[in-house]
Length: 199
Image (cartoon, rainbow, N blue to C red; front, side):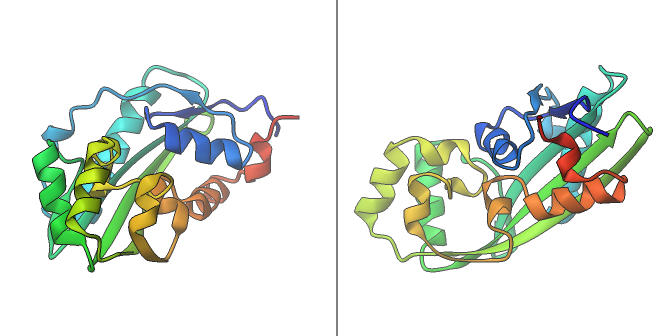
């Protein structure tokens, strides 16, 4: 196998695309238009896996030969599921709740292999310890707009990384895509991640 293999990322996330680039995969980007509100469950594992599956499935339907990766992330705290905050006020309230606490970040991964007509769905969980940030820091951070675009209300690969004390588990999972899990999923489909490297 070689670099003729097409790899499509069913996500508009620049962070996910950049993660793939760092490991040598130049993915085509085709965001899914799946309506996330149609999936309702209080189980974060079910939620992220179903959302990742539907996002990948919608994009895979439009192609005959490619690997299509769909992902979705949420964070939980005290059993409550958090996606992207809807407003500045919600983001501030969320940070007041998260500071000095540990959240659980889940990312669902769905990989559709149209060459072999197979698909697999997995998830990765990472614990995130948040710093005891001040009111000023919370408001200043929310005013950057960065947390409004992120599940969990922070971007580890941006300014939000300043307010994370420790990561327990997969680091890249918190950015939106677990690279070790992707390598394993590709192996489960009989690929080597190096098959996707450009010459």
